[in-house]
Image 1 (tube, rainbow, N blue to C red):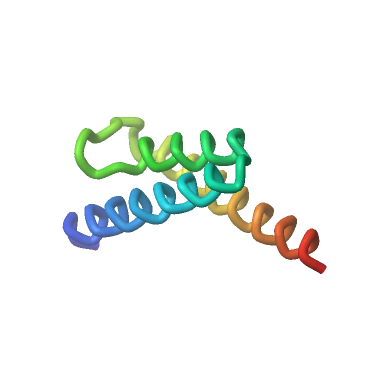
Image 2 (image 1 turned 45 degrees about the vertical axis):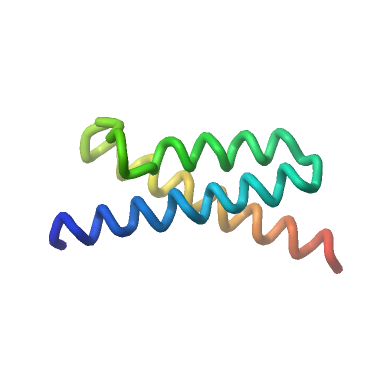
Length: 79
């Protein structure tokens, strides 16, 4: 994929995680807000964090699994 694609993904994830952190903070879920804020900083497109391709792949998979689990848990709590 072109480099611009990855920059766009980084910007979108930065905005989304920032929004999630804000919403969690409004609900006084400070630990979750901190986690989303940390992910926003990790994926932000302005100052790149160089982890290497392999480590970024691991981080991407771990974050994806954590997001899926958090959606599953939040849906179970609403039922």
